[in-house]
Amino acid sequence: MSGRKLGRGLDALIRRSGDSSVVADSPGAGGGPGGIGVVLIDPARIRANQAQPRTHFDEEGLDELARSLSCDGMLQPLVVRNDGKGGFELVAGERRLRAAQRAGLGEVPVIVRDVDDERMLPLALAENIQREDLNPIELARAYRSLQESHGWTQEQLAKEVRKKRSSVANSLRFLELEKEIQDSLLDRTITAGHAKLLLSVSDVKARRKWHRKVVSNSWTVRDLDEALRDDKSQDSSLQGKKKSSKKGQKSDETHVLAEEARLGPALGTKVAVLNTGSKGRGKIVIEFYSAEDYDRISRIIVGGKQH
Image (cartoon, one colour):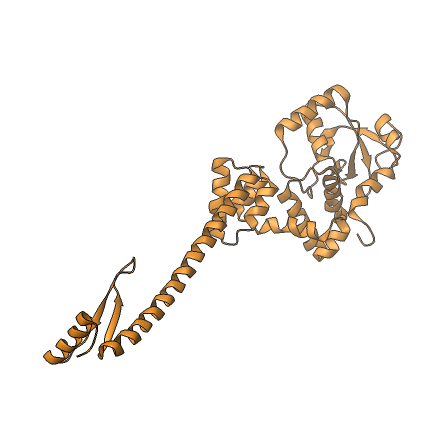
C-alpha cells in the first residue's frame, strides 16, 4: 500500500470501472468478469470477505434493505475479485450482498477487480469508514489489524486512513476496556460516549461497577457523566474533611502544649491537659508531692494567689 491513501482506495477502485452514471444506470454495462465495467452475477457465487472488519449487522436494517432491493434492485454495484475457483470473493458491499441474498435476488451488479490479499482489509475498511457503518469496537479492531499487519505507528495509520492522529488514538483506546464493556459497545448497549467516560475511570473494579450501573439503569451519557462528577465531588469533600481533621488534631495538640506551659508555672507543679473525647471534652491533671504542696496548690486555685 506504499504511496496509497486508504480513503481514496475504494473510490479509485470503482472509478476505474466507469463513472457513477454508468454504475447506477447501466447495471448490465459491458465487460466480463476480468474486464472493465459492471457485470451481473448470481450472489450465491460470491463469498464473504474474510478480512471484513464489520462483524455485527442490524437484522431489522437488513430486512428493510432487502425489501428495498426487491422493489428497486441494487443501484450501487458490489466490488468483488476472482477467487480462483470459479467464484468470487467480496471486496466491498457486505451489507448489500447479505440483503440481496435475503431478498432472493437472482443476480446483482458487480465490478470485478484484481485485488491482492494485502489490500483486502484496507479497502473493506475504507468503505465502512466512508459510510460510517462500523461500530467503534469494529473500527478499533480494524485499525489494530492494519497496524499489526503493516507495522505502522499511530501516526502512519492516521495518515493512511485520512483521520486525525487523536481520532485514531481515541478509537484504539476502546480496546483497553474490559471484555464485557467492549461487548456492550459492540452490541450497542452502550455508546462511544459512555465508553469514553468509562475510560476516565482508572480503577478496573470501579469501571466495571459503573458499567453495570449504566446497563441496569439504562443511563444516558449525561446520566453517567453527572454520576461520575457527583462521585468525584464526594471524594473531594471526604478528602477535605480528612485533611481538616488532621489540621484540627495538630491545632489541638499545639493548644494543649501551650496550656500545659501556661498552667504549670502558675501552679508551681507539673500539669497535664488531656483530651478525652469530642466536643472539647478533657481533663486537667495536677501533680502534688506532699500535704503541704496540696494545700499550697489548692489555695492558689481557690484564692487565686499563692500564700
